[in-house]
Length: 358
Ligand SMILES: Cc1cc2nc3c(=O)[nH]c(=O)nc-3n(C[C@H](O)[C@H](O)[C@H](O)COP(=O)(O)OP(=O)(O)OC[C@H]3O[C@@H](n4cnc5c(N)ncnc54)[C@H](O)[C@@H]3O)c2cc1C
Image (tube, rainbow, N blue to C red; front, side, top):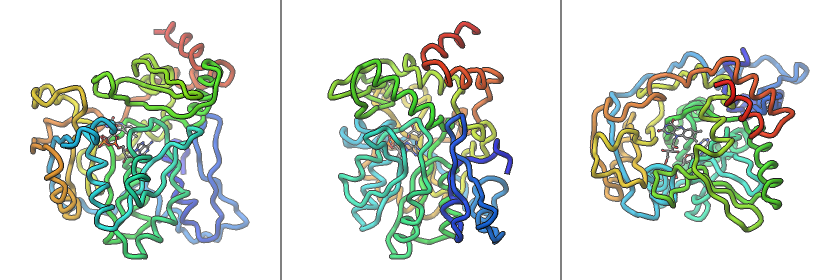
């Protein structure tokens, strides 16, 4: 596959029955599959599970669209949008199921993992603007499905599609994908962590990309270094500035095939952009989620949590936003320039040079 198309989910590595595929990181900090020609038998399983390219799945029914906020203030404050994810996830746990999502480890590494308890669920909450490593938990997803437990898998749309293909249409699998701007480089993220440690003279302990303490819909970033916390507006964060200027996105994100309202997942969740226009009285700065229900399974899960959310049904155009229409645009030569400069300079110096070109 052309490197520009590979979404880096790593499902090919997880699915290969001969262990012939491993993920290797390139100079931009993204992982790509490498095939060992001696171990590969040409069985084609890696191609079968790859989420990129034509899909055979049918759209079950027309999507239904909602705006929603968790009724519990704690759910909303501790999540990035309206707190719909923790409500859905707790419903699954209460019924004896398990939830998979992205967690940030103490060293800042973002990877998918399982939550079986409300305490474990806390780690999956909140948006982490870094591509999460998925392949490590795929076998666990299969094991839980084979045990007959309900599995709620949450992640980017490409990760959800990968897991769907890998699990081969298991009835007890529920997929809640995100509206996704694109995933930033884990390599640049690691570099940024080192720079923060140097700047604040200590060890990295955690980072919140969407802190809500300012009541600004989560537009505050906060880092914890050796017990001290430092916070600043999201748009002043060097890593997030590079992200939203599209310099550190994975190449495949610029041609993402999932940027539409219609999806093959069961539910889609995201930020309800334009809530101030559609329901001005809901716009309290603490976040509103959009929810799109795609399938019968998704509709059942949504119905079972409706008591725990404030919601309204709306038209597709009410919740429309760029990433439900088309992929994030490529920033041209500036991306390569920025990533090249990052090899030798700190992020803030590289960004200062790029800003001068504006
Ligand atoms: C990289 C990225 C880009 C996004 N871009 C947009 C966008 O353009 N427009 C929009 O409306 N919404 C976007 N979102 C989604 C949004 O930020 C919220 O994550 C979503 O609305 C859920 O919020 P919540 O309040 O319901 O729950 P939260 O508690 O905030 O739940 C977070 C959920 O996101 C998952 N998650 C967190 N980080 C990652 C990651 N790195 N990879 C995969 N899954 C992850 C968790 O597993 C959990 O399911 C993006 C999320 C990510 C991770």
